[in-house]
Length: 76
Image (cartoon, rainbow, N blue to C red):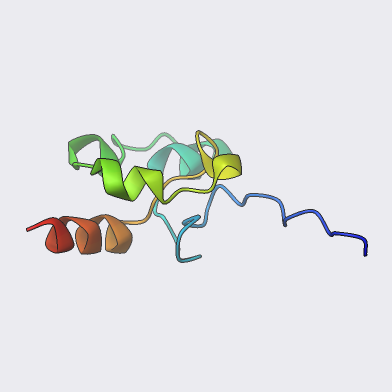
């Protein structure tokens, strides 16, 4: 039975939930408009959250604020 390759990673979408990740770096790349530092530079990404990332998404797409918040809430 043939297998289908996974869909390509969309850098504008969270690789965990598919929501908008609001990545300032991606917005700047896509629009050419300078952006302030991304929201993620001041966030904490738990090891458990990072372990959930599909291998193909690592260094290719940002986790969204909602997934980061949910992971931090679950860790408390």
